[in-house]
Image 1 (tube, rainbow, N blue to C red):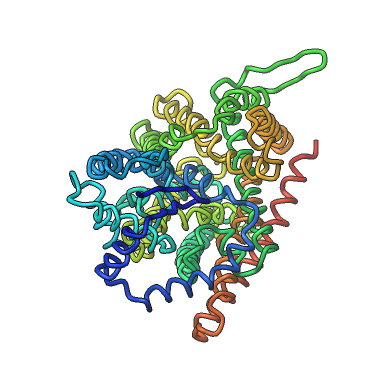
Image 2: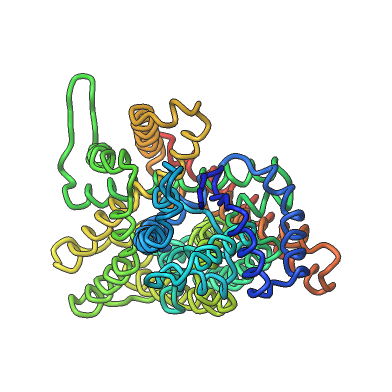
Length: 559
């Protein structure tokens, strides 16, 4: 008689003596080599310390998958589980018909056990063989079940899932995801960066593109050093310990929080350009147009931040690439068709304001936290460097094209967002503005949710499960972004601050430092020199850009 019991995250099968003999025979047939098994166990021993130290935040990977529009595994795994459940049910019914004479003493349902959530692992060949066994009609003997259960028991420690997880991304889908995580609101400020740094400052954009692409490849190599690495915090923990994980996690969440502040400023600026005369003047409350629309925009995004299932929002967020292309087309339409025209102007190089341009250009390549998700979601992970290169080429062409076009159209009058310069009388201008307003509405909840989850994770378990507590935390977070946005309503300078302080660390300094640490003793002298050179560039740009951005913000806050 076969009974089953679920234990921890796996399923442990208890067999009678007869089935255990069958298991031994069938394991011999699978020809699994003992040395391969030992290799797997050795690798598990190597990663034991990593698992032991894994700490906050544990929710980072799942929350970032939705944010980055990388296919989320939950729905697919659930669908696979349902399909597997049906196969197991058929197998169970067939087995029952073969073992009625031995049915007497068990009240345990094999079906109820096998259809529970599985966390079992097989090699690729064994997975195919096991799945064939599961789906085969009416097994000829109980030994078929013995093979299945024995294979599951023997391979429960291997790391190829029986349910093989989500469908992997093709090359084109991976490129799309790469563009989507990099091509965001930074596109709107590239013409303003030319105003700040001059025409020669564009070389900074190209240089950052090359460096950021290279550091993205370094992240891939870091991930390959240990199969348990999945996220930025994982890499930081293995390279620099728990304190490194904590520091990099705080920076990542600070960047997401600051991006939400930028969304509020962006929506307030663009809506106030459409309705400039709307304001509130009361005895105790005086709100200009920008402040009023920032509040209204916050109230609009607040309900979306309460949602715990953001799968629908993630599909909308994937349209960020389309929204960016639409805004660029509207800019070209206004310049060419509507007759605004192009008027060469500007300086060759503005040394005094170049540090602000450094931050603005750096912000354009702030997608590194999501590169591990893209890499792990690919059908062919070896293609990741070429995917990354193509994504960076497309984004750089788009950034530089918009920068040149926007500045030639509006010159020194260019605002921190070129949509604010587009004449409101044109239909294309209206489309561009409203697209710029709607796009953050779809991304705000996805951006603030990782921050909220990280805070909820620190709560006691009972509070963590409370929907009321979750809503309270998210409400406070959203309202705090509004407060910061109203206090510092300087879209361009806030972006430059983020790009200078956080992005330089995440995109330039951290990947190189982690690579040097994890690959210590295995790198050539050239690789070491290149990494230290990039770290030096990142440190210098971070210090100079941060100081300059903070000074600009302080100066603009003075009455």
